[in-house]
Every structure is written in structure tokens, then in C-alpha cells.
Figure: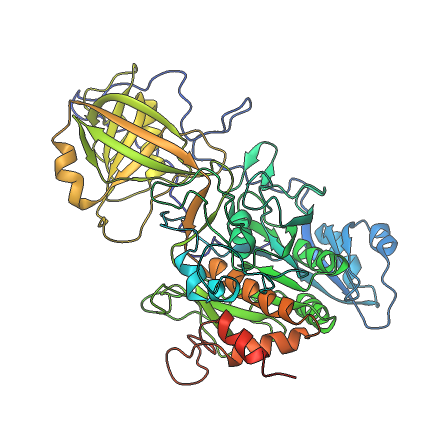
Length: 571
């Protein structure tokens, strides 16, 4: 049975309550011809639904593992009725879709050792706020990358300095927006294991993902002076990755809902090896062991000479320390946890005795799908208020009367009309999406959410997505709520501008920093083995937390300059 794992650290938003509340004649009936929180194309589904396809034929995705020495035959599986989706070379196994009856017949085959579920994996990063002041981001500086390739800090790559040249990095993730100017140069090849084609775009049937893979790729290889549409205050040149000289191989396994199957991940791993990748970077994982077939596949890839880097997972909290996710928990994989810009372990970062390194993973700036994020402006009577756009909210602007819509109940807007208005919603409970659907059906053309969050903290609200229809939506912190409410009944202006960068938190963001540093070291001495590269990074890491290796920080914060200095002492 396929098992789904929630996007780690990202709480699923509640569906529309369906409760029909009327506030003593102050509300009004729903407007006609309004699509709220639905797919913006013919064949729309009901508000609150998702685009996730479900198997309609009763088949389940499995991995059929054969005994050592037995002949692996796709034809044999097909003769029993199974639908083969992949055959592997590293291990004697095939991926297939089978009915319960077909599974039973396969299990009776004496050559079949076991049948394992094709467990679903999830991306390990979360959408949050965005912003940066220069092209060398705080995160890139924290791992010492600029001191390796720009020792005199003049903004120009030093001649002959290690920048990852000649190293092929395979990013197994949600794909890549190849249109992004930061990533056009390093892209070398790609394959889409979701749509089964050679275009690894983070998109399926016109629905775009959140840009998780594009964010990861930017951390590794974004280019100097190649900016897309930037945030206010960002460098006009955009940002630069840890190893801007690498070649990127893009294997798309995460769909637009940020989930993947083990079978696709294993197929991608083999594809990476066929493409002569030095390093495979996986910012995804599952909270359960992926099975013996997966374990042996990762070990076989490691034995073949590939360095495999994976995110540790985001399941920990203030009162619990979660174990490493898989595949990061496998001995063949270099597991990476997350720290903030002060070097403190992130609350969400998973821990374990086999954690190898930590790297920046809190509010990390990088590239995203073109126009995949927005920045907000909120103005009332000439006064600007601090605000943050909601993730999955579309770009756009609207000027209209600010109407009190309570907590976003059905028929709860006091005085709004179908001609349009700006809804003010107190977001103290429930989901933003449920409230947004309700006020949009009452005619809201833009939404301002009042929250209990502080403007001095890191947070960001979100709507259901991707691929659903919303109006421009932003949120204000508790410091601005009272002042904003004084503008009820007045005309206000909401403006969301599309940008090509954002900040995400998660061990998903930490892993590619280690990948980039490994590429710098390997490019400085291409004769090194994967084992030697890993060992060098671990013994030169900045020790944090308890002295020596510990479950929270591993060997410590990865350090590019320290590793390169130590390499000079190695014959």
C-alpha cells in the first residue's frame, strides 16, 4: 500500500467547514460565478479538493525483490498480470503496480524474495518569508564558500579557485525551472520520472509546483550577476550558489504536491549514475524505513563511487527529538541537519547518532519558479503597513473598501457586495484557505488577514495549492492589527508583486549546502574518492554543541575553507 507522508513541518490546511452562518442580516448571499479555491480551468473540482490523483483500478505500487542469483524477468511479472514500471540494475528488483490477486501470485513465485510497498516520500522544505541584502547570502558565507572562490571579496571569482568545475551534481527533487537566469548555465541534463519525459520542469498539465527543486538547485549553483525579479533590498545581481561551477543533472521525482514514490527515487538514482554524477543530493524523505531494496540500492550507488547527500528531516519540535528520515538514516548516505544563521540547531531538525553534518536551513534565500513567490504592499490613506504575502497567493493589486469579515465565516462580511471589496479576516483559528473561500464567495477581490504572529519573528501563512484560484492575499502581525482596523469602511490598496526568489526553511535547504561544499573540495582534487570527500568534510567541520560528534550537530557545521586548507596537507 502506498503511504503518504505530510510535507514535513507543513501542516495540512483544514477543508471548508460547510457551516452556513448568518450574522443578523449583516452578511449577504454568495455571489454567482465566483471560483474560490478551485482549479482555474474547465472541469473545476469542488472548493477544498486537491489535484492529487488516486488509483482507480485498485492496484497498489510495490517493489518486487528477487532472490540473489535468480533471474529478474519483467515478462514473468507481466504474465502474472502486474504492470511493470521500472527494472533496476543495482539490485535484483522491479517496480510494479498490482492488484491484491496479482500480488498473491507473485508472492508464491519461488524466485521472489519479498514484495515491499512503494512508500511515498516528501520534500523536506517549507515555504516562508523572503529577503536578502547582497549576492553572497548569509548562508553561503556561513559555510565559507566565498572565502574559497573570492578571497579578496571583490565580487569576482578568483582565477583558478575551486568553484565545482568538472563535478556533476544530480539533484533528485521536484525538477527545475530552466527559465530562471540563475540556473540556465549550470543545467546539463534532466529527466522527469513523474511525467516520463526529458523535460524536468516542476509542472504537470499546466499546474506548477512550489519550486522546491529550483530552490535547492540555486543553493548549489546559482550564478553571479544573473538575477531574475528580485525582492526590495536584494542585490540587483540576485544571489550566488555555493559551487557555481558545477554541472547540474536534474531528476524530477516529486510531483506538484511534493510527494514521490520509492520506485521513482531508485530509478532516478540509477539515472544519476548513468549520467556519471559525482554527487546525488536528495532533499526529500520518509519517516519509515524504505525497505531492503531501497537500502541496498543506495549502498550499491555508494559502492559505485557516488557521494549521496540527504536531508535529515523536519519532524522534531520543542518537546521532541525525531529520528533521522530515510534515506538520510542509511549508513551509505551523508545525513545533513539544519542550523540557523547563528549556528544554533533548528528546532525542527531531526537528530540521530548517524547524523553527519549540519548546514544553514532556516530562512535560506534562493531561486524559485519564475514568479513563484510574491512580495506584498498594503496601503491605507497614504500609510504603508508591514505585511507578508500568503504563499500560493497570486500576484495582482486591488483598491477597494476594507470590510470586516469576522473570522471568515460564510455570509459573515458586514456590508460587502458582489461588486468587490477588500476583506479583513481575523485569523485566530482554522485555515486561511477555508476563510478565503468563504469571503471570495461573498465578493472579496483581495484579503487582509490579521494574525497573532509578531512582525519581528519568522513566519508565513499559506493557502491551499498549487493550482487553485485565489485573490491577492496578505497578512499583518499583531503589532499592526489595531491600526489596520481603524481603516474599516475606507478605501485601501493591496498589491502583490511576483518575484523569482524566496526564503524556505528546512533540512531540504541544509543538504544542498553540504552538496555544494563537497563539489568545491572534489573539484580541487578530482582524484579523491567519495569516501575521502566525506571524511574531509566531517573532520574539518566546525564543532558545535557537545564536544565531538553528537546527535544534534553531527560532526558540526560544514566549512569549505577549512576543508580546502586541510586538503593542501593531504599528499
